[in-house]
Length: 105
Image (cartoon, rainbow, N blue to C red; front, side):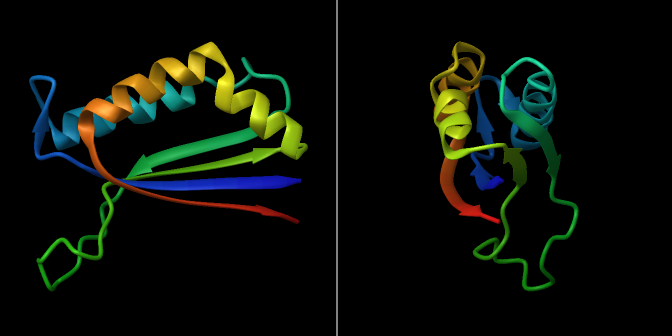
């Protein structure tokens, strides 16, 4: 099995919406992929409610995505799938920073 986990820091405002509104759009879009892409076993996404008491924003990310795939080939297929690519187009407009990790277990 393959895990693909991604975190994003969102622009305060983009595409005429706040970071929270764009985050909610992303969460809904990712959840809509469930059952549509072969090899995608599970997909979870959500907005971060745990903001640091430091208040500097340097260590927090606004949204996370946690996906599981049967194989590396399934992850590769997901990356190029048109439904995923549509989300990527929106992500590029609303995100300032991205972190990701992929691992096999």
